[in-house]
Each structure stands twice: as structure tokens, then as C-alpha cells.
Length: 312
Length: 312
Image (tube, rainbow over all chains, first blue to last red; front, top):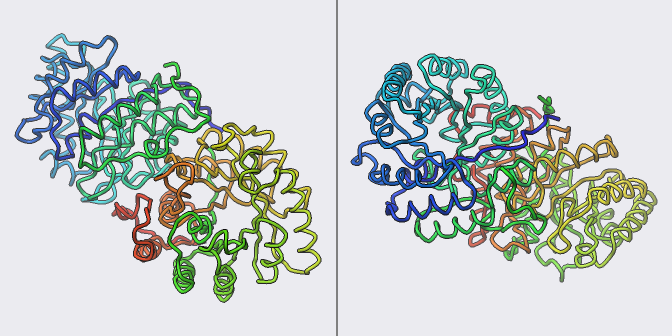
């Protein structure tokens, strides 16, 4: 049996990937509450928003304020998504710890979503790297390869193309690279295969697995990635986010379900699951009318779940 | 990486484990439709009901009729649950292919649910074996060890006790043994450990993994069991069944989600997933007002899911 890593990191992305996909605009004060409570529950990495034009994503217009809040919490590592150099310059000025640049391995999805080919995004990463270096900032640059398991527009995405783009991102100066199953097409077998190769290419520069739970396989996919040595996962509280191509479907894997599973498996995350469930209950109030996901909040913790907090 | 088995069997248990836990009484004609459509979708093992007193489970009062229907379909292997010798005699008379005798490894749960200690159930299995042999029937006897990962009454259940009871069932004459996570307490790591030991004890006499999705981990648990060589899984269409101890929680892993995952992983089941989804839509009509589960029905199949039917 594959030995599991003793610890793993959960990056909360609900404030970005979650909120950008739902109608409700969460007020900045609530975002501050969310960030503070997640921190109190042991979360140490949060993607607080995106530096995109506010007219495109009004839900994330206050990303600079959310980032400023995150920066007041000692040891909290704050990421932001940046679609281009302009967003990266804002993120660097605002003091983000990590800039996530999304790239879609599906050419069709890339053109539809980012209005650029995947290789044009690689070139933009090189410019972002140059700007980062010139600024003297310590922020890391993460190149996130999305639609890594297929896409709703073009269907199949060739794993060789995914790995080629990951290598190109590294060559262009990305400090870290990640793989994302943007639309919930991945299965545990495919995850094992692709992540194993990705880790072989990127080594310590491999950062994160990002799994949508669109078809219920996200936790099984996390397990498969864990088994090949991935130790950082994106998750969204209450599974918020949805999928524009599958109305009614869930978003990212639910943070509370992931934290519970990892704790139950003996993989330490530092997250206090009961406190996270309390925050989830608050979020459910803030987002009344939005569809929430996740099984743990319905069922509660098992009687056998003693270790409320595992050491990170 | 562990090699996955090339094929696996899905046993549909929604007609028993599912229906027994919900209020709606499905008419016999609908059960016949369900059995016929599941068969047409490639399902070849169905647990059609329980031989328990009708006053206890009126939902399953027509188990003999459901079994008679199943027996008309060539190659369909029909199981029934029997709680005791009396039920076993009815099942043998009705021509079941397999008699599942449930045993709860949790002493507290066993006394509360079956009004017997686990070892008294083992003794009953010996009597059922004698009756089966005397009858000349070819029906198999399956001893199913439930609450194998803990229970809502006593909490922790010692894995050593689970394995002792499994060995005792084999010694008492059970032809097959299984493990069930009755209340959704299992995690993939625990599953790997316990099923590995169970397979070592029971060898070819190990039959089935039964996972409830109460906390969302059922598919991940299936993957863990697959990796150690389990090749038969219980599942309930639309995840019906719930959990009496966790109101609002889901029941068994959803058949359609399991069939999709296995197909996506390249594990052949013989199940035609689109046909199964059509049956699930019919079931949703029949069970209007009941809470259904499963992610695939919300999201639909991926564009990349070409192999509608995999060879069994």
C-alpha cells in the first residue's frame, strides 16, 4: 500500500472560486469575518480574491481589502488570482504572498475564457515573472493548469499537452505549478497517472491539486493524488461555486468534508473541524438562498472523531 | 501504484436497504419495473428485499413477489436479507440465490437492532447453514459484518473484534462474508487496513464492500477497497436509504455515481450508465417527496464519457 504523507495543507478558495460563481455579493465585512474565523479554525492558506476588473466580477471587487485583512494575521499565506500582468501588478502592490495565474490546457476553453491561447498565457507568465523580480517582492508565482482532465467545450484534453504546458510554465519562470480539474471530469485513476507524471516533472515546485466535485468524485480524487505524494489541496467552504456548465452541480470539494477526511485518515492539516463547521453554519446564513454542498454538515461528526484538531 | 482489478460487480440494494429506510411504500409493480430496468441496464445482482415480518417493514412485505420477478430474468443473481432461521426458510422456499445474514460487530447496536449478541447471530448462521444443506438448495449464505467501522451507539468498534466475528461466521458455515460501514464512519485509510486483513482471512470467500455515504466518503472508500482487491460493492440507486441516526444524511453510495466512477477508472462493470440514469429519473418520479442523493444525476455525464457500456 502506498504510504500517505503525514501532513497536508488545505487552501481555502471559497472567497475566490466560490464567490465568483454565485450571485450573492458578500460584503467586505463578512469576508473579513470569514478570513478571521478560517484562520481561527487553523486554515493557514487562503485565496482571498482575484485582481480582475470589478465590472467583470463585482463579487471580488474588494479583493485588495480582503488581502489587507489577511495580511494582518500572522502566518497566514494569502493568494490571489491574477489573469494577466495588470492584475499581477495590482497584486504585487497589495502585498499578496502568491499570485495564481490560471492557464487552461484546453485551447477552446482558453480562447473562450481568457481570450488567449495557452501559449500566450505562458508568455504572460514570463512577463509577470519579470515584473515580480523587478519589484523586489517575495511573492510566489503559481501557474495553475486548468481543464487538465477535459473540458466542456472541446471534450478531451491530451495529458501530454497538459504536461507540456506545465513544463512551459516552469520554463517561463513560474515558481510553482498546479493541476486543476476545473469541470469535474477527473477520476481517481486518471488523477493518479497525471499527478504522478506532474510530480516527476515539477518536483518540489509542484504546488496544489484543485478538484471540483461536480460528479461526486472530488474526495476520491484527493485520495488518489495524496497517494502519489500531493500535499496541498484547494477547497471551498460548503462546496460553494457551482459549475457554469452544469447548473445545480457543486463547486470545489467542500473544505469541511476534506478536512474531516484527512483528519480521519491520520493526515494532519492543523484544521479544527468543529470550528470549521461553525464557520460553515455562519456562511450558510450569509449566503441564504444559495445552494450549498458537503455531506459532513448534514450528518455531523462521527462519535469516534475524537481528534478535533490535528497538529499541522 | 496498486493495480486495480479489471472488473467489479455492483449489487443494487436500493430495493432493500434503500426502501426499508424511507416512508414511501413502493408498489410491487414499480419494484418489478425497477428490477427489469436495472437488468436492462446491465445490473446482474440485486438484493430484492428482506424476509422479515411485514408488520416490522411494510415496505418490504412483497419480497417474495420481487424475488419471483427477479428469477424470471436469465443470469440475474437475486439476494435477500434474512434476519434469522425463519426468514432463511422463507428465502430458501422462494428460491433466492443468496441469503444475506446481517451481524452487527457493535454489541450495543446488535442488541438494540437484532436483540441478539453478535455471537448469537453466529450461532443462528450455523442453524441457517444446516437448514440450507438439508433443503438441498444451492443458495449461498453471506454473513455481513455491519458497523465494522464504528457505530452511533457505542462509538468505536475494535477491528480485531470485526475480524474475529468474520472468522466465526466462516467457521459457522457462511459461504461468503462481507464488511459494511453501516453508519458512514469509515475513511479510506481504515478501509484499506481492515479490508486487507479481511481478504487475508476470507480469501475467495470475501464477497462485498458496503459503504454508506453519510459523510461523503463512500466513493473514496470504494477506491480504497478496490486497491486491496475487493471486486463487489453494494449500492443504492439515487443513494436512497438515509441514516436513522443522521436525519437528512444520504444512504448507501449512489449506484449511478459508483457505476460512473468505475467506468471512468476503466474498471468494467457491465453497467450502461445512461440507461441507469434514465431509471434513476423514473425512480425520482416514483419516490416524489423523498430525498434523493448522488452527484451525477445533477451534473450529467462528461463529454469525454464515451464508453456508455463497459464489458462485464
